[in-house]
Length: 268
Image (tube, rainbow, N blue to C red):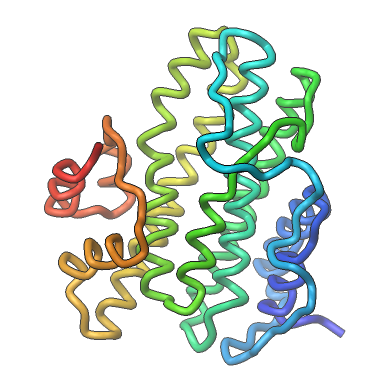
C-alpha cells in the first residue's frame, strides 16, 4: 500500500537518524515527481513520535553559548561548516512540517515544500561529506535551535509561518552567505565555497516560495502584506535582518522594492 504524501512527510519529520531522514526525503521527492505518491490535502496525519526527530548529538544550547570560531584553522572551519549543516538539517524539518501540518491548501503548496525539503537534504549531505574531509561529522559541535523555535511559535498560523520562516529567517541566509564565502575562500577552502554556491542558488528559490505563499495567504485572508508583515514580526518577536543585505538575491526571491527599502530601514 502506497502511503499518502503528508503522512510520509510526518513520518520523515519524526525520523531521528539524519542520513535516514536525508535519504528518505530525497526518495520521496523522486517518487512524487514520478507520480507514484497520492496526496490528500485534507488529511490529518498524527504521530506519537517526538517532533522533530533528531539525533542525540549535537547538544542543543542557547544561541549565545555557541562559540564563534575562525575559519582559518581546520577546527574552526569545521565548526563553521557544522553550524551551516545544522541550519540545513533544521530546514529539512521545517519544510517537512509545512507539508504535514497545513491542511486544505492547493496541491502546488505541498509540491513546493517537498521540493524544498529535498534540496535542503542535498545541502545537508554535501556539508556532511565535506565535514568528513576535515575529520568531523554532524553532531561533533554544539548547536542552537532558533529555526525550530519559530516553527513552533507559528504552528497554528499558516500566514505567520510563511512570513517568518522562509521570508525572514531563511532570507537571512541570503545576506550571510556571500560574506561567509569570502571568509572560506580566504581560508583556502574552495570546496566549501562551491557548496555555498549551490545553497545560495537554491535558497533564493526557497525564499521565493515563501514569498509566493505568504502573498497567497494575505490575498486569501484579505490582508495587506506591507502592513501585515511588520505586525507579524513584532507579534512573534522575529529577529531583525543584519546588514549588509543581499538586495540582489532578495529581489530575485520576490521582495518588492518597497519591501527592500523597509528592510534596510529596520536592519541592524
